[in-house]
View 1 (cartoon, rainbow, N blue to C red):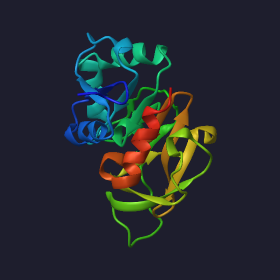
View 2 (view 1 turned 90 degrees about the horizontal axis):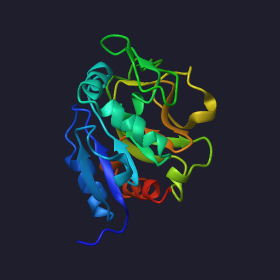
View 3 (view 1 turned 180 degrees about the horizontal axis):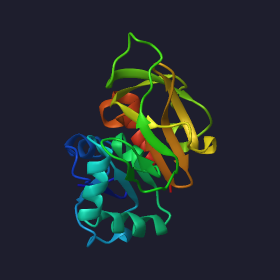
Length: 211
């Protein structure tokens, strides 16, 4: 099979089924490899994706126990694009307080905490489609209109202590919720592009076009 894009590392933090992510990338013409060991050579990959669902503390524990923290560190030195999805975006922060306070990868900085709702009619987890308001241009959202709906399922998110210069997208859900970040070659989205149909696939394709 001929692949349109390079080889994508899908980093398994042990908290999610990776099939839908791999299928989405395959659909748009990319070859994927699930990474479960630091023995893999980061230079074999043009892009890396860190998906995840579940708890912050469990994801970070798994990354350390499986030595995937080392793989990520070596990959980042190459300055190639990395995309965190859902929990994978959250662990890009300095720390999270889900279950217990846990140190994150500290790539974006800031902290992750439970979403604070100012509307008693809303519930957590935040499940379903919500319009993403784009705050600044980003190659990740190229040709994707402002307020495009994406699919969410989460109860935690980046807190307001993250540097505003890295925040590229928010949604309104009982207040402003940070749902997209960017710092140099590292990106994070709180929603699930692999479950967000047309524009979700467009976002993944945009990610693969970032060199």
